[in-house]
Structure formats: structure tokens, C-alpha cells
Length: 147
Image (tube, rainbow, N blue to C red; front, side, top):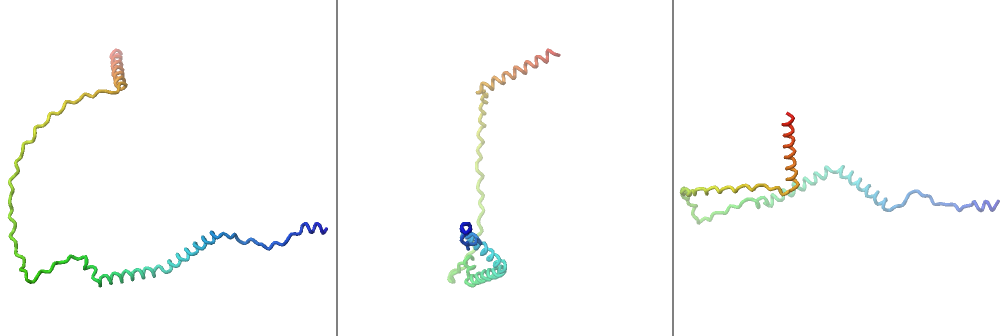
């Protein structure tokens, strides 16, 4: 009996598999959790970002106005020198009528070239058309004979 008990006896196993250790999955789950946390944080504080952005834009535009930046884009008028006389009034321009240009008679029309007769280069097409004409003529003759 002791032999059978010795054969069935196994050493106690203390290893219990509780989870699969895959570093890639741990890292992926971390990024998913972080993204969700950032999304919730932005959702809760989105009004704050709007207020901050509005303030930054308002401050920037105010500083640009104080620096006189819009004046950079306005047209500059040249100041008149104190010693120069005011501009004199120029006389109105005189209207000159130019003579009408000489009209040349139109050139005579060129004679139209004679139309070139169309030649059938396709022998099969010419033969087909001739056969069709012959068939039409034959059918016409048959009709006349049947009357």
C-alpha cells in the first residue's frame, strides 16, 4: 500500500493563475483610462477654457490697439510744407475730336472651292450599298408585276 500511496503522491502546487501578464495590454489599458480621464476633465472644465481663450484674445487685441498697430495699415497723407504755395487750379481739359478713320472697302468674297466628291475607300461598304440598291430595285419590280 505504501507503494501505491507513493505513486499517487504529488508535490503541492502553490501557483494560481489569476491573470495573464501582457505588458502591451497593460499599456493599452493605461492609455484608454488616461484618454477617458482627460475627456472627462475637458468636459467638466470646457467653459473655463472658453473664458481663458476669450481673455487672451481680448488682452492681445487691446495691446495691439495700444501699440497703434491699426495705424500701420492706414494710408499716410504727406504733410504740406509750410513755405510752399497752395496748389493752383488747373484748367479743364480741352476736348479734341479726332477725324473719323478712312473706311476701306471690304475685300471681294473668295470663290468657294468646288466640293470634292466623296469616294468610298471601303470596297466592302460600296459592294454592300450596291447589293442593297439592287435588292430594293428587285423588290420594286416584283411589286409592279404583282399588281
